[in-house]
Image (cartoon, rainbow, N blue to C red; front, side, top):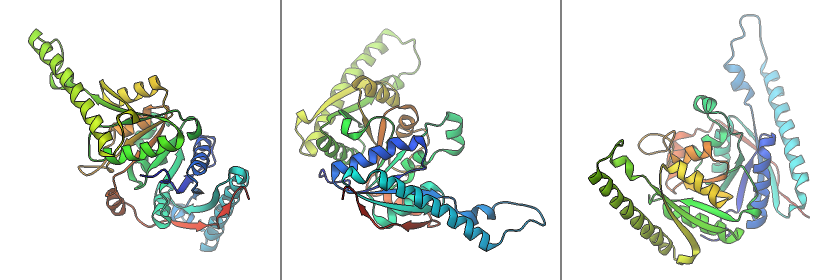
Length: 333
């Protein structure tokens, strides 16, 4: 994968302070990769929203009034998006805006499909656990459903990223993960770290353990570590990367806890993880490692899907969204 991989970037914003990290990250990435950057905002679908309300007898709103309200929302969003363009004209990248209509995660996915974006960048509020369970967030839903990589920005800028962490569980998506991470590390001048977490204690139940069982457990720990290191080295070789390309780490423990602890220890700016889908046997389970890291880590996270995931997304996502596109602007000119 070449360093020019992210050439068409969509930055989704709700104009909140939490979106600022995503905004600055997207501008930095577009500058680094020399690609086009589109600022997007999704407004409420007014007719659909009013159709779900029950106002009782005697209360009416005309289709013309609904259209007027929808137009006002679109005009306000377009104005604020153009303000972002004006703010970043000096960045030296091609800028455009899109006004989306509908639920943000659905509208963003529709825009990805229509305009072939190859990366989506968002910020996240880091909602509390109860609210996440009840309604989720745009970032979480994009991590589950968006067919292209999703960069969830939290801290620091890509320009300042000194280390990138890639947790690998040796599933088929690992090669794609490593390819994306290696391109990023090369472009950003960052160190690459590969991590595998194993937890052989799960095989032995709850302590106390007999002396023989403890000896057997110690043996399997050593075996698991050696095998994991060999597989990490093979992962580098498969992509034609030298052994010095990345630092290898194998650690025992619960996956998301090991990932978070390693990220803090190495002070990485970005974690690159894979996700295979959304729900059920063929997809992403709520509470899997990628989502647990998303909900507990204070680091930026890049979630990558396998190429075939686009088929899953096509089945899940409807076309009940619309897009208004403003002509591109070459900033810095």
